[in-house]
Image (cartoon, rainbow, N blue to C red):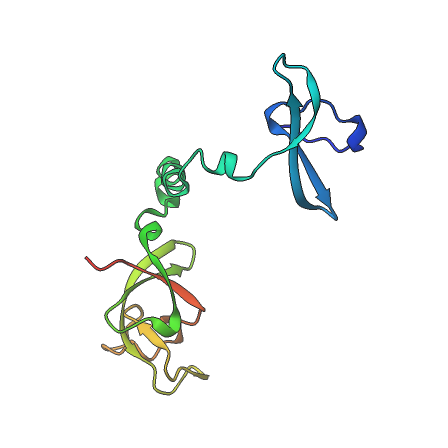
Amino acid sequence: MSLGIDRFDRLGDQGDNGVYIIDGWKIVDRIETDYDEDWNPRGWRHIDPSREESYHDFDEMLRAFDEAMPENLRLGAFLDGIETPTADVKVGDKVWMRQYESGYRLFEVIGVGDGVRNGQDMTGIPYVKNYDHDGDYSWNCNNYLREEAYRIAPAA
């Protein structure tokens, strides 16, 4: 694909890329050359976005890209996770949490906060079995689910 910016009346046949119509740098439409039965240009026609989006299943494409990534950068089973609002996460769920400089890891939710930890009120916030202190996982605020939503591993 190539990119060129010009006045509409000076654009020629752009092949299968079509022409993107922009308004304030937002794409608002896409058109392509319309041909008659003898392949003579006769004007422009709208390109329905579903035309290309229907060629490939998104999940299949995403998994193919993931498999082609270097192993340490793959998302793997993370892609199977069900995005769930934190308020709906329950004890026993297994959630994917991003780890410092090492991607995502799966952790079991083992409790719900009941007070201030490391200067932050964690009341009602689920926490995972990650950073331990003599069997107590509630002590470290990094164990708590503080994002709006998490991916939950499907039940086995």
